[in-house]
Length: 140
Image 1 (cartoon, rainbow, N blue to C red):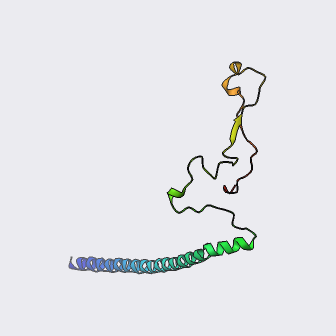
Image 2: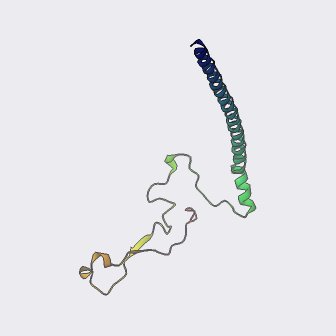
Image 3: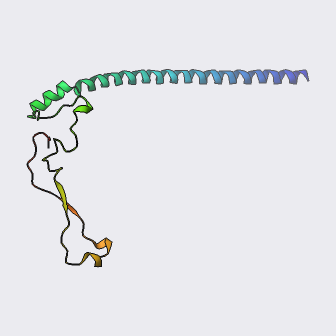
């Protein structure tokens, strides 16, 4: 009986050792994977920093202005506003003489009387623009 009990104790001890080895090996592999992921995160953050610096250089106003001038684009007259008090009031420039201000709608003439027509078969309203000179101040 004691031999059987000793055998089961030794077998249980062996299984415990194997289980502990499996857990420690799994922990080691997970630790290596965590180290790799942390390194990838660090490299990605570094590359994001480089890309942000490059974007700041590429999208800088001075560079955009230089490129625009090199491609023949010049500054047009534009109003630069520094506060809401300087915004034009309704009816004031820059839309006084622009096509947007003078837009109107015309309904085409049809041969049938409007009262006899169903709403789905009514003629569509087509907007038209009256010919107006384009304002220098509007930027259109």
